[in-house]
Image (cartoon, rainbow, N blue to C red; front, side, top):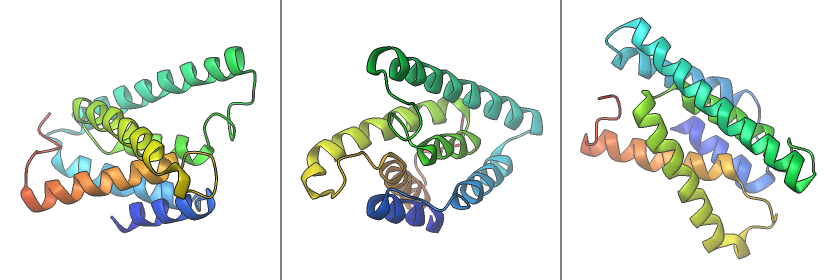
Length: 153
């Protein structure tokens, strides 16, 4: 959770996050995921499926950015930190859980930014920071309430 707090604070404040936090987050999440997986091949299959889903999302975003918006992909449509956050998140959960968390975190980020955009100094969306806040809330809730089991699927 401290890693997520660090990512969120840095992204809100500067729109720049120390790159080392993303591998640390990925290692922590894949460690928890491996402890909750029944077999190593299940973990590998989950991670592979999640990374393929992230690759599809990034490809569609890239094509939209290049074809329709006619602007560079990285640092205009999506930041490098956002991409690294997606990859770290993909390592940490079973595929069904990842899909639900990923979509819900994107919706949470959109609604949060639309609600509080006047308070942000920078007009860009702190996507990794908002997704980090969402994960803090979900992980905190699942630890203290023990429901839902994020690793049941």
